[in-house]
Amino acid sequence: MKPHLTRRSLLGAGFLSAGTFFSKLLPTTASAEAQKVESPAYAAHSDTAVEHSVSKHGGSLTVGDVDDARNGFNPREMLTDWDRGKVSKLPDGRTLREYEIFVEERLIEIAPKVFYPAWTYNGRVPGPTLRVTEGDRLRIRFSNRGTHPHTIHFHGIHSARMDGVPGTLEAKAGQEVVYEFDAKPFGCHLYHCHSVPFKRHLHKGLYGAFIIDPDPKRHPEAEKVASSRLLGSPENANWQEFLMVMNAFDTNFDEENEFYAINTIPHEFMKRPIRIERDRPVRVYLVNVIEFDPLNSFHLHANFFDFYDHGTTLTPTQRTIDTVMMVQAQRGILEFSFQDFEPGTYMFHAHQSEFLELGWMSAFEVVA
Image (cartoon, rainbow, N blue to C red; front, top):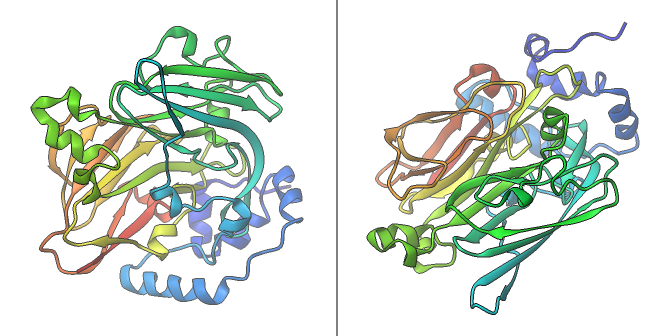
Protein backbone atom coordinates (compact mmCIF):
# COMPACT_ATOMS: atom_id res chain seq x y z
CA MET A 1 0.00 0.00 0.00
CA LYS A 2 1.23 3.47 -0.85
CA PRO A 3 2.23 5.26 2.39
CA HIS A 4 0.09 8.18 3.51
CA LEU A 5 2.30 11.25 3.51
CA THR A 6 1.60 14.29 5.66
CA ARG A 7 3.71 17.33 6.41
CA ARG A 8 4.24 15.88 9.90
CA SER A 9 5.61 12.62 8.54
CA LEU A 10 7.89 14.73 6.38
CA LEU A 11 9.31 16.38 9.47
CA GLY A 12 9.78 12.97 11.07
CA ALA A 13 11.61 11.67 8.02
CA GLY A 14 14.01 14.63 8.02
CA PHE A 15 13.65 17.51 5.61
CA LEU A 16 17.20 17.34 4.33
CA SER A 17 16.18 14.21 2.41
CA ALA A 18 12.95 15.78 1.14
CA GLY A 19 14.00 15.74 -2.52
CA THR A 20 14.43 11.96 -2.57
CA PHE A 21 11.54 11.30 -0.18
CA PHE A 22 8.99 13.28 -2.15
CA SER A 23 10.08 12.16 -5.61
CA LYS A 24 8.97 8.64 -4.65
CA LEU A 25 5.61 9.75 -3.31
CA LEU A 26 4.35 12.27 -5.85
CA PRO A 27 0.85 11.78 -7.27
CA THR A 28 0.88 9.41 -10.24
CA THR A 29 0.29 12.12 -12.85
CA ALA A 30 3.09 14.31 -11.52
CA SER A 31 5.51 11.35 -11.19
CA ALA A 32 4.95 10.27 -14.76
CA GLU A 33 5.71 13.74 -16.04
CA ALA A 34 8.66 14.17 -13.71
CA GLN A 35 10.34 11.07 -15.18
CA LYS A 36 10.48 12.82 -18.54
CA VAL A 37 12.62 15.65 -17.18
CA GLU A 38 16.32 15.36 -16.39
CA SER A 39 17.48 16.42 -12.94
CA PRO A 40 19.54 19.64 -12.67
CA ALA A 41 23.26 19.35 -11.88
CA TYR A 42 23.54 21.86 -9.05
CA ALA A 43 24.99 19.65 -6.35
CA ALA A 44 28.37 21.31 -5.85
CA HIS A 45 27.04 24.86 -5.69
CA SER A 46 23.96 24.11 -3.64
CA ASP A 47 25.75 21.90 -1.11
CA THR A 48 28.10 24.78 -0.33
CA ALA A 49 25.19 27.18 0.10
CA VAL A 50 23.31 24.76 2.33
CA GLU A 51 26.34 24.06 4.50
CA HIS A 52 26.93 27.79 4.94
CA SER A 53 23.31 28.49 5.89
CA VAL A 54 22.99 25.53 8.24
CA SER A 55 26.27 26.24 10.00
CA LYS A 56 25.38 29.91 10.43
CA HIS A 57 21.72 29.62 11.44
CA GLY A 58 21.02 25.95 12.13
CA GLY A 59 17.97 24.06 10.95
CA SER A 60 17.17 22.02 7.86
CA LEU A 61 17.18 23.11 4.23
CA THR A 62 16.29 21.42 0.97
CA VAL A 63 19.27 19.86 -0.80
CA GLY A 64 20.03 21.06 -4.31
CA ASP A 65 18.38 23.71 -6.45
CA VAL A 66 15.30 24.11 -8.59
CA ASP A 67 15.91 24.62 -12.31
CA ASP A 68 14.51 28.12 -12.83
CA ALA A 69 15.18 28.04 -16.57
CA ARG A 70 13.06 24.91 -16.98
CA ASN A 71 10.34 26.41 -14.81
CA GLY A 72 10.33 29.58 -16.89
CA PHE A 73 10.25 31.82 -13.82
CA ASN A 74 12.68 32.82 -11.09
CA PRO A 75 11.63 33.54 -7.48
CA ARG A 76 14.38 36.13 -7.15
CA GLU A 77 13.27 38.03 -10.23
CA MET A 78 9.72 37.93 -8.89
CA LEU A 79 10.86 40.14 -6.03
CA THR A 80 11.04 43.13 -8.38
CA ASP A 81 9.58 42.25 -11.80
CA TRP A 82 6.70 44.74 -11.76
CA ASP A 83 4.49 44.42 -14.85
CA ARG A 84 3.33 47.89 -15.92
CA GLY A 85 1.34 46.64 -18.91
CA LYS A 86 1.05 48.17 -22.36
CA VAL A 87 0.58 51.90 -21.74
CA SER A 88 -1.43 54.36 -23.82
CA LYS A 89 -3.68 57.39 -23.29
CA LEU A 90 -7.47 57.51 -23.34
CA PRO A 91 -9.31 60.43 -25.02
CA ASP A 92 -9.91 61.99 -21.58
CA GLY A 93 -6.16 61.99 -20.89
CA ARG A 94 -6.16 59.12 -18.41
CA THR A 95 -3.64 56.28 -18.60
CA LEU A 96 -4.80 52.97 -20.05
CA ARG A 97 -2.84 49.88 -19.09
CA GLU A 98 -3.51 46.72 -21.08
CA TYR A 99 -2.54 43.17 -20.10
CA GLU A 100 -2.69 39.74 -21.70
CA ILE A 101 -3.18 37.01 -19.10
CA PHE A 102 -3.75 33.35 -19.89
CA VAL A 103 -4.21 30.13 -17.95
CA GLU A 104 -1.77 27.35 -18.69
CA GLU A 105 -1.52 23.92 -17.07
CA ARG A 106 2.16 23.17 -16.42
CA LEU A 107 4.34 20.83 -14.44
CA ILE A 108 6.61 23.02 -12.31
CA GLU A 109 9.49 22.14 -10.01
CA ILE A 110 8.65 23.53 -6.56
CA ALA A 111 11.59 21.96 -4.69
CA PRO A 112 14.65 20.06 -5.92
CA LYS A 113 13.33 17.09 -7.93
CA VAL A 114 9.79 17.68 -6.66
CA PHE A 115 7.33 18.41 -9.47
CA TYR A 116 3.83 19.77 -9.14
CA PRO A 117 1.00 19.79 -11.75
CA ALA A 118 0.15 23.48 -11.47
CA TRP A 119 -2.48 25.72 -12.98
CA THR A 120 -0.76 29.00 -13.79
CA TYR A 121 -1.31 32.54 -14.95
CA ASN A 122 1.13 33.15 -17.82
CA GLY A 123 3.09 30.01 -17.00
CA ARG A 124 4.26 31.06 -13.54
CA VAL A 125 3.33 30.80 -9.86
CA PRO A 126 2.57 33.38 -8.62
CA GLY A 127 1.29 35.09 -11.77
CA PRO A 128 2.61 38.41 -13.10
CA THR A 129 2.81 41.23 -10.56
CA LEU A 130 0.54 43.92 -11.99
CA ARG A 131 1.65 47.37 -10.84
CA VAL A 132 -0.45 50.39 -11.77
CA THR A 133 -1.27 53.88 -10.49
CA GLU A 134 -4.43 54.94 -8.73
CA GLY A 135 -7.00 56.10 -11.31
CA ASP A 136 -5.52 54.19 -14.26
CA ARG A 137 -7.92 52.35 -16.54
CA LEU A 138 -7.11 48.64 -16.73
CA ARG A 139 -8.02 46.33 -19.59
CA ILE A 140 -7.15 42.65 -19.13
CA ARG A 141 -7.67 40.20 -21.97
CA PHE A 142 -7.98 36.84 -20.29
CA SER A 143 -7.73 33.61 -22.28
CA ASN A 144 -8.24 30.12 -20.90
CA ARG A 145 -5.80 27.62 -22.40
CA GLY A 146 -6.58 25.07 -19.71
CA THR A 147 -9.16 22.30 -19.51
CA HIS A 148 -11.34 23.72 -16.70
CA PRO A 149 -13.37 26.94 -16.35
CA HIS A 150 -11.34 29.81 -14.84
CA THR A 151 -11.70 33.47 -13.87
CA ILE A 152 -9.66 36.37 -12.54
CA HIS A 153 -11.13 37.94 -9.43
CA PHE A 154 -9.40 41.22 -8.55
CA HIS A 155 -9.31 42.48 -4.99
CA GLY A 156 -10.22 46.11 -5.62
CA ILE A 157 -13.24 48.25 -6.35
CA HIS A 158 -15.17 47.48 -9.53
CA SER A 159 -18.67 46.74 -10.81
CA ALA A 160 -20.41 43.39 -10.31
CA ARG A 161 -20.00 42.76 -14.06
CA MET A 162 -16.22 42.67 -13.58
CA ASP A 163 -16.12 40.50 -10.46
CA GLY A 164 -14.68 37.33 -12.03
CA VAL A 165 -16.82 34.72 -10.30
CA PRO A 166 -18.79 31.76 -11.74
CA GLY A 167 -21.38 33.17 -14.12
CA THR A 168 -19.58 36.52 -14.39
CA LEU A 169 -16.71 36.66 -16.89
CA GLU A 170 -15.81 33.03 -16.29
CA ALA A 171 -13.90 31.69 -19.29
CA LYS A 172 -14.50 28.12 -20.34
CA ALA A 173 -11.69 26.12 -21.94
CA GLY A 174 -10.64 27.89 -25.13
CA GLN A 175 -12.58 31.09 -24.37
CA GLU A 176 -11.39 34.68 -23.96
CA VAL A 177 -13.03 37.38 -21.84
CA VAL A 178 -12.11 41.00 -21.10
CA TYR A 179 -11.99 42.68 -17.71
CA GLU A 180 -12.00 46.48 -17.62
CA PHE A 181 -12.15 48.78 -14.59
CA ASP A 182 -10.42 51.70 -12.88
CA ALA A 183 -7.59 51.08 -10.43
CA LYS A 184 -8.77 51.80 -6.90
CA PRO A 185 -8.17 51.95 -4.00
CA PHE A 186 -4.41 52.33 -3.79
CA GLY A 187 -2.74 49.54 -1.87
CA CYS A 188 -1.26 46.06 -1.94
CA HIS A 189 -3.85 43.73 -3.45
CA LEU A 190 -4.09 40.41 -5.24
CA TYR A 191 -5.97 38.57 -7.93
CA HIS A 192 -6.91 34.91 -8.16
CA CYS A 193 -9.23 32.43 -9.82
CA HIS A 194 -12.68 32.19 -8.23
CA SER A 195 -14.03 29.17 -10.09
CA VAL A 196 -15.24 26.18 -8.11
CA PRO A 197 -14.03 24.25 -6.28
CA PHE A 198 -12.34 27.41 -5.05
CA LYS A 199 -9.73 25.75 -2.83
CA ARG A 200 -8.55 23.61 -5.73
CA HIS A 201 -8.15 26.53 -8.13
CA LEU A 202 -6.33 28.61 -5.56
CA HIS A 203 -3.85 26.09 -4.20
CA LYS A 204 -3.03 24.83 -7.70
CA GLY A 205 -1.38 28.21 -8.35
CA LEU A 206 -3.91 30.64 -9.84
CA TYR A 207 -3.04 33.84 -7.97
CA GLY A 208 -0.83 36.90 -8.26
CA ALA A 209 -0.15 40.32 -6.77
CA PHE A 210 -1.97 43.49 -7.84
CA ILE A 211 -0.34 46.70 -6.59
CA ILE A 212 -1.96 50.12 -7.01
CA ASP A 213 0.43 52.98 -6.27
CA PRO A 214 -1.16 56.13 -4.82
CA ASP A 215 -1.41 59.16 -7.09
CA PRO A 216 0.36 61.93 -5.10
CA LYS A 217 -1.86 64.62 -6.65
CA ARG A 218 -4.88 63.00 -5.00
CA HIS A 219 -3.25 63.13 -1.56
CA PRO A 220 -1.94 66.66 -0.97
CA GLU A 221 -1.98 66.09 2.78
CA ALA A 222 0.59 63.31 2.38
CA GLU A 223 2.07 63.99 -1.05
CA LYS A 224 5.64 63.15 -0.08
CA VAL A 225 4.66 59.78 1.38
CA ALA A 226 2.46 58.97 -1.61
CA SER A 227 5.30 59.91 -3.98
CA SER A 228 7.63 57.48 -2.21
CA ARG A 229 5.30 54.64 -3.23
CA LEU A 230 4.89 55.76 -6.84
CA LEU A 231 7.12 53.56 -8.97
CA GLY A 232 9.46 55.67 -11.10
CA SER A 233 9.28 58.82 -8.98
CA PRO A 234 12.47 60.39 -7.55
CA GLU A 235 11.15 59.77 -4.04
CA ASN A 236 10.59 56.09 -4.81
CA ALA A 237 14.07 55.56 -6.27
CA ASN A 238 15.71 55.50 -2.84
CA TRP A 239 13.55 52.62 -1.61
CA GLN A 240 14.45 48.95 -1.91
CA GLU A 241 11.10 47.34 -2.77
CA PHE A 242 10.25 43.64 -2.90
CA LEU A 243 7.16 41.57 -3.65
CA MET A 244 6.74 38.52 -1.44
CA VAL A 245 3.85 36.11 -1.97
CA MET A 246 3.55 33.62 0.87
CA ASN A 247 2.35 30.38 -0.71
CA ALA A 248 2.31 26.64 -0.05
CA PHE A 249 1.84 23.36 -1.90
CA ASP A 250 -0.11 20.22 -1.13
CA THR A 251 1.87 17.76 -3.25
CA ASN A 252 -0.20 14.65 -2.54
CA PHE A 253 -3.63 16.34 -2.42
CA ASP A 254 -4.54 15.31 1.12
CA GLU A 255 -5.41 18.94 2.04
CA GLU A 256 -2.24 19.41 4.07
CA ASN A 257 0.68 21.42 2.74
CA GLU A 258 4.05 19.74 2.39
CA PHE A 259 5.98 22.86 1.35
CA TYR A 260 5.81 26.54 2.33
CA ALA A 261 7.63 29.36 0.59
CA ILE A 262 8.05 32.94 -0.46
CA ASN A 263 7.50 33.17 -4.23
CA THR A 264 7.04 29.38 -4.58
CA ILE A 265 10.51 27.91 -3.97
CA PRO A 266 11.17 26.71 -0.36
CA HIS A 267 14.30 28.04 1.37
CA GLU A 268 15.41 29.93 -1.77
CA PHE A 269 16.13 33.11 0.16
CA MET A 270 17.78 31.25 3.03
CA LYS A 271 20.27 29.62 0.69
CA ARG A 272 20.87 32.91 -1.13
CA PRO A 273 19.79 35.82 1.09
CA ILE A 274 18.31 38.97 -0.40
CA ARG A 275 20.92 41.72 -0.63
CA ILE A 276 20.00 44.90 1.24
CA GLU A 277 21.93 48.18 1.22
CA ARG A 278 22.11 49.23 4.83
CA ASP A 279 21.51 52.97 4.30
CA ARG A 280 18.43 52.65 2.07
CA PRO A 281 14.93 51.93 3.48
CA VAL A 282 13.13 48.68 2.66
CA ARG A 283 9.51 48.24 1.58
CA VAL A 284 7.95 44.77 1.29
CA TYR A 285 4.64 44.13 -0.45
CA LEU A 286 3.44 41.02 1.38
CA VAL A 287 0.54 38.79 0.27
CA ASN A 288 -0.73 35.60 1.93
CA VAL A 289 -2.39 33.02 -0.33
CA ILE A 290 -1.86 29.71 1.49
CA GLU A 291 -4.70 27.22 1.49
CA PHE A 292 -5.43 24.62 4.22
CA ASP A 293 -3.95 26.71 7.07
CA PRO A 294 -6.03 29.45 8.72
CA LEU A 295 -3.08 31.73 9.47
CA ASN A 296 0.33 32.63 8.13
CA SER A 297 2.84 35.12 9.52
CA PHE A 298 5.95 37.19 8.88
CA HIS A 299 8.61 37.68 11.56
CA LEU A 300 11.71 39.87 11.13
CA HIS A 301 14.79 39.10 13.21
CA ALA A 302 16.68 41.77 15.16
CA ASN A 303 14.56 44.61 13.81
CA PHE A 304 11.03 46.04 13.77
CA PHE A 305 8.78 47.38 11.00
CA ASP A 306 5.77 49.61 10.41
CA PHE A 307 2.81 47.81 8.85
CA TYR A 308 0.13 49.17 6.51
CA ASP A 309 -2.76 46.70 6.52
CA HIS A 310 -3.85 46.13 2.90
CA GLY A 311 -1.59 49.09 2.00
CA THR A 312 -4.62 51.36 1.78
CA THR A 313 -3.38 54.04 4.18
CA LEU A 314 -0.45 56.45 4.03
CA THR A 315 0.12 56.19 7.77
CA PRO A 316 0.92 52.86 9.46
CA THR A 317 -1.92 50.82 10.92
CA GLN A 318 0.62 49.21 13.27
CA ARG A 319 3.92 50.72 14.35
CA THR A 320 7.13 49.12 15.55
CA ILE A 321 6.20 45.44 15.39
CA ASP A 322 8.34 42.46 14.41
CA THR A 323 5.60 39.91 13.66
CA VAL A 324 2.35 40.19 11.73
CA MET A 325 -0.35 37.53 11.31
CA MET A 326 -2.41 37.16 8.13
CA VAL A 327 -5.42 35.13 7.05
CA GLN A 328 -5.74 33.98 3.46
CA ALA A 329 -5.94 36.93 1.02
CA GLN A 330 -4.79 39.40 3.67
CA ARG A 331 -1.89 41.53 2.60
CA GLY A 332 0.00 44.63 3.56
CA ILE A 333 3.08 46.78 3.22
CA LEU A 334 6.05 46.53 5.58
CA GLU A 335 8.54 49.39 5.92
CA PHE A 336 11.81 49.17 7.86
CA SER A 337 15.45 50.15 7.79
CA PHE A 338 18.80 48.63 8.71
CA GLN A 339 20.50 52.02 8.95
CA ASP A 340 23.12 52.01 11.71
CA PHE A 341 22.94 48.20 11.93
CA GLU A 342 26.08 46.16 11.57
CA PRO A 343 26.32 44.31 8.24
CA GLY A 344 25.33 40.69 8.34
CA THR A 345 22.65 38.09 7.71
CA TYR A 346 19.23 38.81 9.26
CA MET A 347 16.60 36.11 9.09
CA PHE A 348 12.88 36.52 8.41
CA HIS A 349 10.33 33.73 8.36
CA ALA A 350 6.91 32.50 9.42
CA HIS A 351 6.56 32.22 13.17
CA GLN A 352 4.76 28.92 12.87
CA SER A 353 7.80 26.69 13.39
CA GLU A 354 6.38 23.96 11.18
CA PHE A 355 6.16 26.37 8.25
CA LEU A 356 9.78 27.47 8.47
CA GLU A 357 11.03 23.88 8.70
CA LEU A 358 9.06 23.13 5.53
CA GLY A 359 10.49 26.01 3.53
CA TRP A 360 9.23 29.41 4.75
CA MET A 361 12.58 30.58 6.10
CA SER A 362 14.57 33.38 4.48
CA ALA A 363 17.20 36.02 5.18
CA PHE A 364 18.44 39.46 4.20
CA GLU A 365 22.16 40.04 3.64
CA VAL A 366 22.73 43.61 4.84
CA VAL A 367 25.77 45.28 3.31
CA ALA A 368 27.37 48.64 4.10
